[in-house]
Length: 169
Image (cartoon, rainbow, N blue to C red; front, side, top):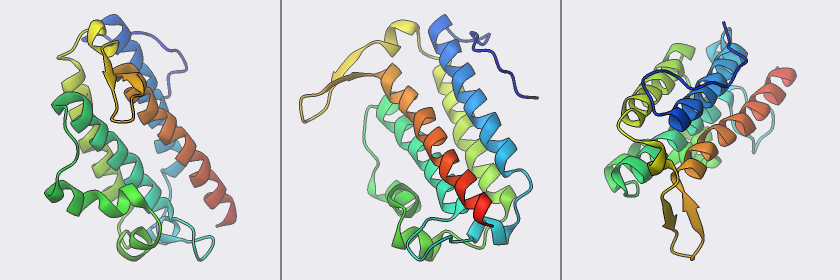
């Protein structure tokens, strides 16, 4: 059952607990939207240059994975990791060629494994960490709270695409 309240989740500092609540709500809605999709549905391309639902699900997982690296390890993705995630991160032609013929359970497992690591790691930080300011190479200031907000913002955006694709199935 989906919880429609944002509240601090036990086991986390207050703001991180609220962030976890938002991440988990976002994921619960996504999972509800995809729960009965077949492999054929997951591979369906609504246009020659579109992305499949499967590719979008892998993209959601890849964005969260990269944000784990950036925030928990303070590094970018390495070449070995990029071999697994490149198609999902970039989407487009490479994703259309390589992200297909997977069951719903495959995608659910990928999403769950990444999320499990996120939740485990977030327990190690305080609210002060969320607000620590960093600066990108282009001089733009950001904080970890924004980066994790972006994870579920991206998922919500792609969930809209998934819903549009489902309407054309």
